[in-house]
Image 1 (tube, rainbow, N blue to C red):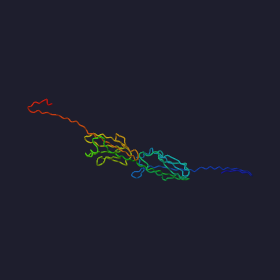
Image 2: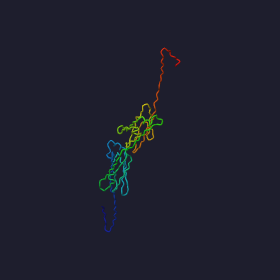
Image 3: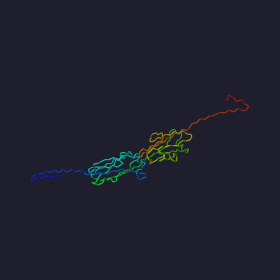
Image 4: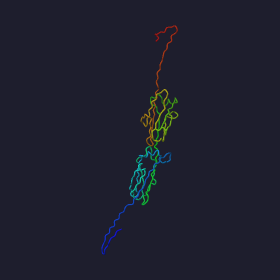
Length: 273
């Protein structure tokens, strides 16, 4: 308040200057990672949390009244939780932009709960939880058996002789996936594996046939590989593997010896040699 002295017949000019400060507030956004396995969503297991080290998500809050927006980054360094302060009062909508995904996984669902927040004078900062659900990247591998031109054994020979070829497809760790299968007239000459988790796989073949030398060439999506390595590197990867076998019959040597027997009482005629 102010005081002004007014003398008899005097005049006083008073100027009142008002200063208004906007009442501001804040809100909180927290991110939770979930994993979908067998149709069930579970909290990301401890043994997979190392995948979050480089994960990065941008969260943007936008004021419904004036469309002012503010973006903050959620990372492992801030425990995927951030407070956005100095916001005007009112309702805000929330959106996210995933900058760095989880390696080997893809996003299948994401929700804000709630989807909008209202900043109210004198109230505690409201919080929204962003839940992202990820599933393991999967792909398929199709393996086809072929025989080289000029091979001494082909499909018809395998059928006629009742021969088969045994193969094994194994995950890199040798534990999480291992399946043996057979190429034969009964089983067919192609085999497909679907919904395989992303990662590296090795294929080995037992295709030796007695009396034949074998040379095998493995191509993966048209590229020759020497170690039988197959890799599913992204979601829905489709890998085509062709194993071409070339059988060549082994060649041997034959030694013939001639023996001569003398008749009793008759000298051996050297002219016979």
